[in-house]
Length: 352
Length: 281
Image 1: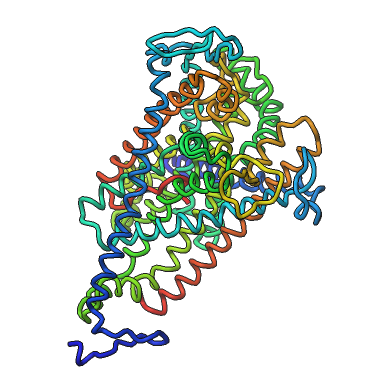
Image 2: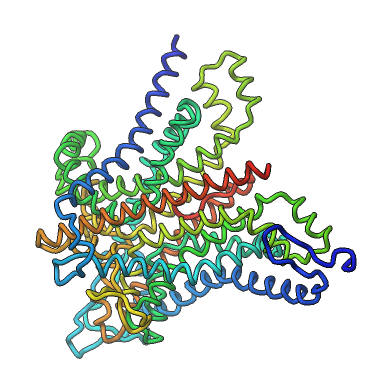
């Protein structure tokens, strides 16, 4: 064959001699090898991250035992006293005790608020975007989803601090607090506008793009025949959405929502800025200052470095390990739910 | 009649939902740009920060430097990995590696930063440095680049691969001369998204890149580097109005860069669809 096609030409490019097959055999192998190396890196990175976290969390796991999960106070102890205490072979400064319950609760509550508020808004807006908005406008409006997905999380935090927080504390929370007579955790005091509910609302805005863009893409894949059938039966457009389109894409939406929840669990900067940094206590009501695992790691690592025994850094690693386990569980659950029913895979991360 | 009313009520609710998506986006952009409007000046862009005042020169050049490092490190790994998953990997292996990559994308960014801090900054003794920050960002965005590369290659019709094989081309040549050029626009859109993510990250950088008032240099380790997101989150906590202004300006600059990146992404995909129309893909 090589005699016929001595040279294979591609327009505008250097000719490639085909006889050089041997050389390309090597090239194939090189590309294959490099590709494999690249494809392995993410998986290796996950294992590496898990291993490093586990190893550096080990002293804390030994020292704190299960109490880490249900104690409420996060106390470095006295770094400057030379006296140390030893427990299970782990040295710690006097007075050190680590309990992650408040930040675990804070992580779960903020993300659950984000889920409960963000998911209906995301699904609703995706529905109207696909079913009612004319295509040219749809492109423009989709731009806002892209924008929300791309806005840096510190900018969300800044907006929460100077715009959303004060607005909510001044105009919305006082009204909401009147419901406190019926639902106690909605009651006053409403505080400064930095706390659990504000953090949850900011997170809701941040997870909307993930859920909305996935829902939009899934909805536009619903085949037209069953929908025409719904119209032919005289259903209103809401009924056709409820009975045909939504069941068609339901598990995909559930998957995307869980993925969004996972993102809210691990979000750091925005929460750090608007959560009010409530350390060492459980939230009293829905406006109460809170803190999350991710925010605590950023806030405390600096001072944790001064612990001469290294236990403070280890305790943060243990908190990180718990966060990683929770987020991985949500991620895997989300992907399994979607893979079972649909060929579209979920977006990763922010869902741009 | 009740059904008609329910229909109207539901679609009105969805309309409100859409408004709740669009309004915060507009409010963030307009609010932040308006807050920073007073302090826009050439000095802002061309003087470095000093203490809690000054400009943002060190920060935006640092951000660009980190983005460049990211492109150098993450793009080859992600694109090669994506090529492998789309073209070479056996079904089973590719599935496992893809799962690993999706899992990595779900790991919170602060955890990536924390591990890079423990290993590279402390253990390897690099101290806060551009390279440590770049590695943290790279680990975060590889899954995005890999995913978009794989998806881009999968969109290229199979008969082009068969054509390549029929001509006796080795796979590497088919990939390089036929598949990659066709997939290139989508791969590039993926890279733009990765850059946008990296530009906006803070959590993985605080304990890896550190912060510096001076301009980035070619020294990649043992020297911290500044970046825009740091200014936003640190300076807003300072009790000085100058510091606050600087935080607003940094946030505004980030938004402008984000809009530019989104525009670039749209430009590339618009060109891509023209290209695809021409070749009837």
